[in-house]
Amino acid sequence: MRIIYIDCFHGAAGDMLLAALLDAGLEIDALRRGLAGVDLGGYDLELERVQRHGVQGARLRVRVDEGQPARDWAQIRALIAGGRLSDRARSMALGAFGRLARAEAAIHGVPVDAVHFHEVGAVDSIVDMVGFCVGVDILSVSKIYASPLPLGRGWVRTQHGPLPVPAPATLALLAEVSAPIIPAPPGSDGELLTPTAAALLAELATFGQPPMRVQRVGYGLGSKEFPRLNGLRIWLGESDAAEGDGRESLSELRCNLDDVTGEALAYAIERLLASGALDAWAAPLVMKKGRPAYQLACLARPGDVAPLTDIILRETPSLGVRWSPVERRAAGRDSLPVETPWGAVRVKRKLIAGEVAGGAPEYEDCAALARASGAPLADIYRAALRAAGL
Image (cartoon, rainbow, N blue to C red; front, top):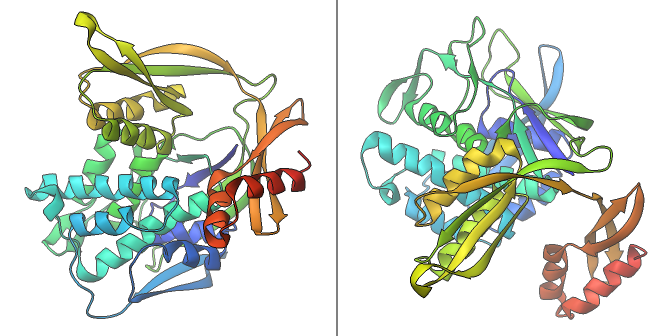
């Protein structure tokens, strides 16, 4: 399982997170193609290699044209929801941006759909946040981890005037998920963690350093000068969590719902999977007095129980969630890129004792080629399996 660990040694910002992904192997042309799925113009990406404090890394600038329209959360949500993004990238982006909008709405006392972002900052935020989610999806990252977060000190200028560091929205986002924080290092006056980065980390990351085999390291550097290196790094690699015979101690979350719509149930499952659930499902059942209902359930690592419980409570009418420990033996897996007559497809292979024991093409890859070519989806599936020797 491919994972990333975000080492926030000097905080985090949206552009630094995206720059670190690019430095770790994400192709900028692939990122541009992914972002083109959102109907948003008037900007350009400028990636450069820079050196700070003897360390080389990537710095990303979003060059925004003047005259951008003001956008509220309802408009931004429509842009993302209606964009040509993968289901996973769309769900992650909506979840992260939605967290930011809810935090801003609560702080400023306005309806969440009416939350406005800076005219230029809205474009920056959309590109940074959607771009990070697109990049994670392109790199086939299954799980995101993050270190404790230094927050800085002092004051930051905002459209509402000077506000204390961390910015109120940043602190609210961290409090919502009980994120671990550490004191700012000496000489770190200023904002080290931005609201956009806080929203991405609160929505997508599990806080803690995982056992892993590191394969690539990417540095994302900020533009502001500090006495220390202003940046973060992403460790990209494979999980070591299921060594040996593949046994894992997990938790199963459940709740019964007799007053939920099919749309809400499907969306809850989508959110659970995008937020770290290993599996999520719904099964029909009959409750007291013969009422038809559904049981919503998901499989989670113990450290993800709290955030996934919160999603169930927020996204469904349930008043409570039960969970219990379960044991699982998981086969190993990897992803093999293959070429078909219609284009490239990733094939997910099942591994037992290091040997290939089966596999399946990635649906999103095959579906995209089928839509573009008009070829039957089944033909692309079969070609991908043949190319992978399965």
